[in-house]
Length: 96
Image 1 (cartoon, rainbow, N blue to C red):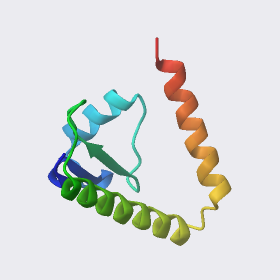
Image 2: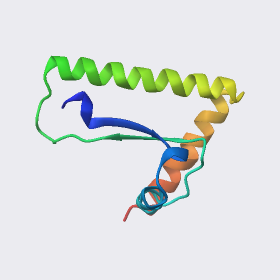
Image 3: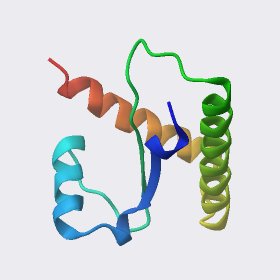
């Protein structure tokens, strides 16, 4: 897996048709202050050590930015966890 197979996009920077497609895929509306993280990989293919390090560095950067955004918006860890739980429950209900 190469690092270029990872992308993070700000929702407010997405073109309308791309945003609508993602909303359809995810099953809910996206907010302008959100980001979309997309990773492409081939199951069963082991990435090289360099690719793993690059991917980890990219994920750590995204997580740091997310933590900073949560802090700036005064969102507590408990509020964040509650929101994640809510979304996960919604995803579970949609699966056959």
